[in-house]
Amino acid sequence: MNTPNRLIELATVFLKLGIIGFGGPAAHIAMMEDEVVTRRAWMERSQFLDLVGATNLIPGPNSTEMAIHIGYLYAGLPGLMIAGICFILPAVIITGILAWMYQTYGNLPQVIPLLYGIKPVVIAVIFNALWRLGKKAVKSRKLLLIGIAVMGLCLLGIDEIVALLMGGIVGMIWLVLLPNQPTSSMILGGLGLNLALAGSTVTTATVTPNLWQLGLFFLKVGSVLFGSGYVLFAFLEGQLVGAYHWLTQQQLLDAIAVGQFTPGPVLSTSTFIGYQILGIPGAIVATIGIFLPSFIFVLILNPLIPKLRQSKWTGAFLDAVNVSSVALMVIVTLRLSQTVIFKSSGRLPIDIAAILITLISAVLLVRYRLNAAWLVLGGAAIGLVIQVNS
Image 1 (spheres, helix red, strand yellow):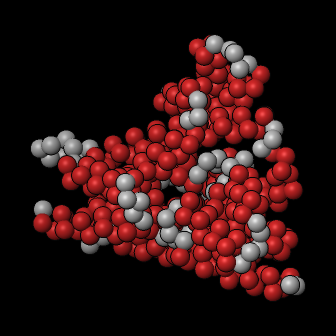
Image 2 (cartoon, rainbow, N blue to C red):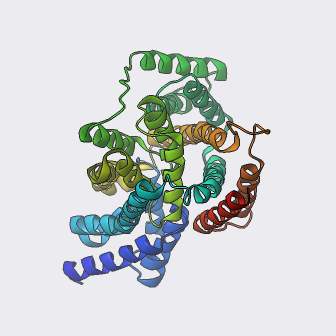
């Protein structure tokens, strides 16, 4: 089959997946496997699994990188671009429209009840991702201790990206070069190295960024985002909310909710955030910044896939970075939960309704694997009923 026909096929498949791809990265990858292995026989299942493994070795959203890998193997460089853009585009357009609606109507009383019910669902969705990723990431006692150490660094105020990368470096050295090193000395050494590096890092707080600052921030995050799109929220909470004050926690929660409600990659949340900060130019710059590294990484590393997993160094680094990513997610989940559960006024300091919505949503996700989009809709309906009757 000639290249133009292959490009049309890729565009058709990945536009469809971008439109109907609810349920997160695992659901996206399952849909891709059905389309390109079972239905179209573009590759063998073993080759598909090799690609899945390769996406875990490089930063960026797994399902988006799977689309890019498949496009590259099926139609070369043009296929890489077509598959990736077509998979991302529907989510970006839908998220951009919702961002405009949110900025136009988000502060009106008619919308606030919907957001009241959606935010606890978001906490449950993040908890579910945290539970699944944690079970996969914590493969040994050493990795568990690395994750705990990274959590401690974050609680001390260390930059999330510094903590993530140093967790990977310390873990790689410990697991490969010093497998018999006592736990306490290795963890304390890693903490000291992190604190020394963090002390040399100067962060400038900015209230109103320009386009370059916004674009470089999302480019930086897209270049180090290991594990899952959900890890993005840890970076956003620590940097955009905590350090730069470009975003409020309420806006972040609403952005996460939009990411759950829309199909396609979770990282389309960046489109929503960019729009809130700097309008349409901000949405474009943030979107390009967060996704561009994935295209570059796949282009460079695709030919090296057979060798990557065989290296004990890259394998150990990946294991340590993955567990560090889960640690970051634990911290951000706790911080966001405080915003949802605790009330600033009223007879009770906690919001019982929000706690119940969170717990019920978590059960439906973990036990029955209900699609997050349906839970978001249900949470909006419950929030509307509660607020109208209160």
